[in-house]
Image (cartoon, rainbow, N blue to C red; front, side):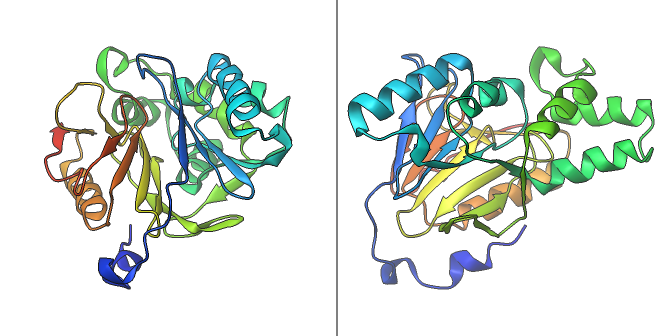
Length: 249
């Protein structure tokens, strides 16, 4: 990971743009889909088919825009609760799907026989959290999502067609987790890297790799962020929303 671009200009020299991000979710904020509303729109984490229906309604009745104005779908990571709506969304718009190049590298390594079944199970322990942590869901789930992706995103690269948005690798919750950051509007879309569903302080979701998780937190804290958009829970508006982050080891 690299945060050099965050330090190219002092925060005071950046004219703060209007917020770009709209939240599409249920009333409990259980799984959030985000819409980057620009000349051409980006959907981040389509979630479920219900999220897609809510997105379609929001576009038509609140923003008065069409699905054809979506030019990119971004997956912050490949867990099913964030990706199962991709196929439903692709049926009603022609936008390509983008995800971290880390996922491609993991899958290609597996397909070439670089991972034994035991090593995949070990990797799954780092990818899954909570009660599913020791269930080996990695091969079927990730192989299915892999086939949906058209564009592979590299760390620190600009988002295709949306150069003001930067890709930030944020391994911890999963190896291929990424965030999207706009230094001009100071918005951070962080998927499940950071969640707020617990209430109180944001929670950085992690794995057994403490060094990697500490590096992810360092990079995110180096950014000027006023608007934090988590994969689960309510967005946060604050001067320094990542200051008091709790860490899930």
